[in-house]
Length: 288
Length: 288
Image 1 (tube, each protein chain N blue to C red):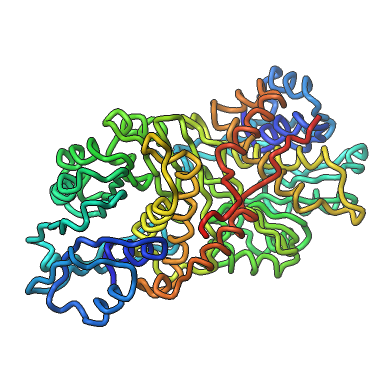
Image 2 (spheres, chains in turn purple, red):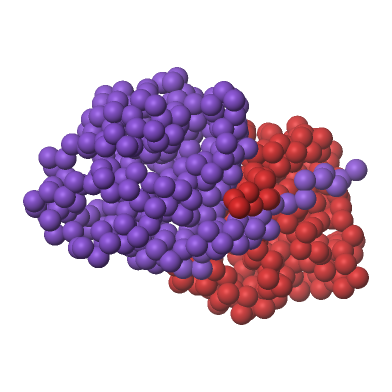
């Protein structure tokens, strides 16, 4: 079981109700559907089409950061058009997982009342659908990109310079994912935050780590009250990035969504406390 | 002006007196010697030999982490044997910068009274002088290695597993350098610390960043009082790693040791405070 929607929804449903929009084929196992239904995941927006479910096969490099795609089978994905049930339209938070930018735009336009919109993407769209991707970037609040994707999209070697180019498109926040090294949060309000990752003895399967990150990030935000302006405070956004990293670390501990299925919010709380110990240092300057 | 000794000594002399052991050729500019003399750097252990000074030429990749060596000229380095003046023998802290392991062993044996010994190395010695390098590792307290070097030396994909193999050789601490991503501190006492890097808009020249890190690390430790056992506390070692990262960040801001020459301890203090802001997050778990 895989796919951005599976990882994201399983992760975010630890925190709150998730309204899922996706497509699977008629080969999608009933037990997977039963699992999703057993969580706080609304499947009214899930389409089941005749044909095979999307499949991706890849191989990870020794450092578990880089990977090679070995096979991609679009299946029912090829003709997918997302449809949002009207019950979804009260959602405060919208995550546009990594699909064709045109489809992300359709979802975005169908959900104009979201308080915070978060966009994920991948190298493929940067290379093959740059103009369409740019239109979506212009209309969302937060962009998730890996360091390499920021360099690819902006052509700038410096992440800081690249992020400024992205801000010029109208974004309020950019989260730069650094694989096993953590994530950076940049805000147009001057926010800068370098979030550490929880250290893992062994990485079993980094697939879906980015979607699990998004699940933790948006899941945490769904538990907090925004400011009067309707925006989230920089401190809440920082905490949300930490939640994202923690959920991403759990996701990597086992194949598929296995670890996320058994994960409890108390386990996340324990790891949160450990991450404070592992990454905070004495804030006092001690040289006179 | 370059070389591990130049970067290390310039950095560490911000904190304390440095006793330098090195060799340069007769072509080494007088102005460089005059600069070193102007700092708290004792040059009694510096040999000036007939012949050319060591030179290294390299090219950095776009992400400024990877690099290719274009040319290495050993010059007077080829026949170098370090000699420690007797005035050096009271030094509490010993840094063995990256040279042939046999020469590192000579220095180590000549300075048996050091309270803390810190070893740096590089891929070349892992590949060509593994047995000799292992002998030095067995006799020092702290090893500095990049992530790639830990993988090369131990053959383990997981840094945690690799570090355990290194601990089996007798080390007390391993510092895993992660380039622009920071550094990890591992201790046999269970210490684990992930130190963030100070964010740089532009990296001008990462050459010497590792030696500058060592200068900040050992420089900071030279300002603190060790425990009654003669060891440094884990909190001091964590702070020392932060100092290492900060000094490394300054070193990357300009070519050669240019930025380190003008650097003041007050600038380091400012950056220390900013790094707390940039990397610490609310330690309280806020989900009920």
